[in-house]
Image 1: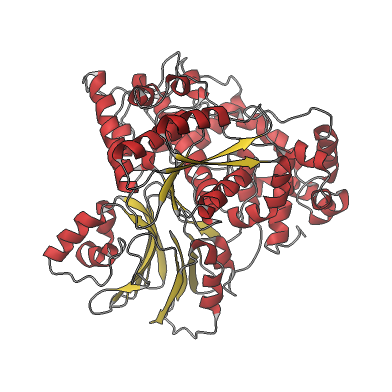
Image 2 (image 1 turned 90 degrees about the horizontal axis):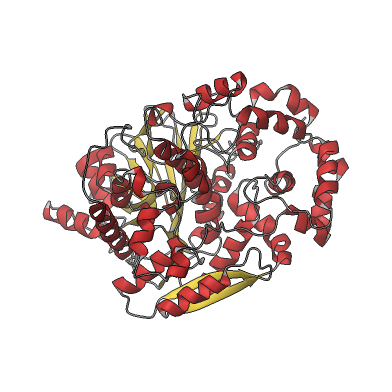
Length: 617
């Protein structure tokens, strides 16, 4: 995994290299501690930081084609690079490195933007075509790796993280309150939105063309389920179970490709246990390392199941004990990496986990994200089996029609009622202009991808877009792993496997008795029954009530009445009420039914402070 950044004049003007590129690139040192590279030419500047995983020697970037007309920087891995390389060499292309990503340069020569249809990987890259004066940027199908951009004053600026984009002097630093409203409404930000005005996230399965003074955005992939009733395949259940097992094993094998040690996370749940079992089944040269985190609080601790699975597999197991005090110690740094306020503290646990991976000498870790969203792993999927839910409230019906394209589609909560709750939290000035920042004023996903689909598939699509891509894979996954220069890989998100998952009938994903039925069948004989049949247990840590009880000075300062009032984003009286409520002995925010609003206020304050963002004047 690496970090890429750069900028380009939209008017084609020459770039005077005054240290801007180096300052932008320096912000990404944690993504690529091994080496760096740069290129300034023809009105474009490209910067790169490298984390060496494949082709350790001589894999510096930018990488150029044979005549130097094409230059590329890439953050990521191309898992089918061997097949692509053989094909390209047969056509006469000459390679200068042993890295996997060099195939992108020569694929672009052959296919232009069509190269994206050939890739199995996780990537975010920029290719400069000097002959066409074009910059081509793309993000992988699943959105595993981030890519951000801004268009200030005739410039196009991009980076693997927002902090690199903000380092360009033409990019202003202002909070985006619609982004904040998304965080309060959904698990995190959604789509192109970020917490910084004028800075956009390139969405999963999209690419950009910067050419002739314009920036053009296009979609090349989406999670596309069949229309309800179109599923006419009457193949036996065994076909789906066997094919899923084969594709998952193939995906794990692909993601073990590396010239450095590879390990895996072990949460104690089905998904990571199945990945671990397949790592051992596929086989490696050394005993695979597994990594887990434990808590003294038995209500959230899963170490019994983690140790059970580690013994079952015979892994070289590393367990990190996490204390509530560690949350306060790491929260500021976590927000700096996440570049987003959060509603849960478990990102600090994920960051501690990646520190353990790095300390062991491991640089790549396999993890189980994506299984819940693709194979109906959340309790809501069983709820959907009961049929569609009519709101009965004309305001809620109208809101669902606007954001989902369907007044009967229920997802997570009644958003009209929640909108009223959010209004109470905002400062009076924000409340008065709420219509300007309301994240539900327009669709948040493409309604056409929901229309006519089975309710289970509708929820899967929404989970994929609203929970997985911009939250679990971004601020929780990529950022927390790269905080310690560790690359995370996701076997459940292999494009071939995802494509097959859209064909698996809903009846094999969820039943009235269980979620993830198909995956549980795949796991039989690989994972102990005790883990296969245990209840769903979400990864979580103590929330803001525990932080308040710790009495941490800087937490008290950021939540003080005077500071909240001066900043002008939240109502200080409401924040005081929340503090009083959260301080009550034994009070906890329900992990599934409640929102830790105070933690969002706190981490938004950390964001303002960390990135020098202005008060709401």
